[in-house]
Length: 155
Length: 182
Image (tube, rainbow over all chains, first blue to last red; front, side, top):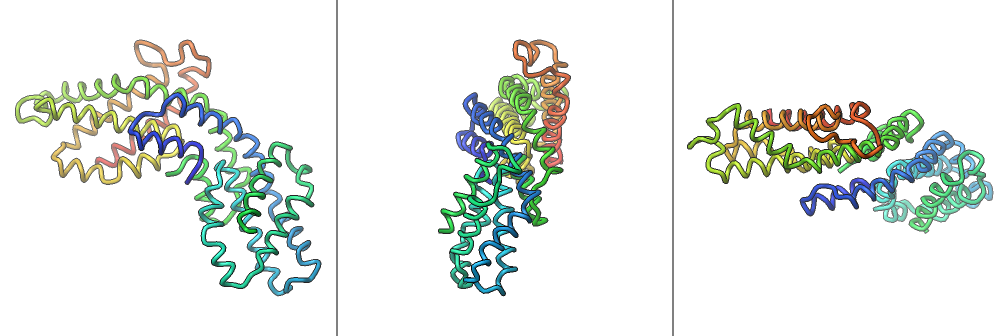
């Protein structure tokens, strides 16, 4: 799975050489950012149910979607937030790409689900929920970056 | 290929749970030890030819028949192949140590290694002995119990005594190689 370290190791291995000084530098760079990423992951893990329910409630409030699907929507939003938690841990978009985005369009289309509902829910989490009450600003930036990435992929 | 971070992700995904505080403690340690880990990896990369050639020389000294006509390290072409393999194994151990996870070593080096050696007629017992010597040498350099130049001299990321954990981790990767060949 793609992360700063595995990228470096793959390219060193492809060339058959030992890790070089520039490889160490780039690994070091990713470790420097790791602190805020891990904080965001930790706080997201503890608020994941709360964020999910707030977002789904907000989306279903205007009753333009069938209430019968609400449980499934909760499940999916929770799933995507969990993948974002994984991405925060690895420091790359690998988990979202591999388990959440590839093939997603096909699955959503075949089940006739409205992607707009997902987008709305994630935009609600990004814009309406006061994320900075639970995590620091750097952590919030990391989290919102991934939310944006997912929204773009869904839209 | 996985690293310490993605290993946690894969195991959390199997449970369908988000990664919370408990699992993050290990990763925080990995991040806070980053400088020591990088220096320990450097200890391997800067001493590759020394570690590998000592190990092969030690293996031959203990079993001098190897370099006699009919031995497995005769002629020099086969001895050179042996040195090359020692360096390759060290290279994969250095990758695993940097990543904090043995998957790269297992997938790209150990998978099928024993079968290859058997097919080529390489005596695995001698190969294992060479790897044992490499393990001892690597741990000695990382923990500064070696004779000669000390690893942390002139750099201030830590000391040999503080590198015990990482040296033990490196030793576990050599053990995986030994296990794969046994």
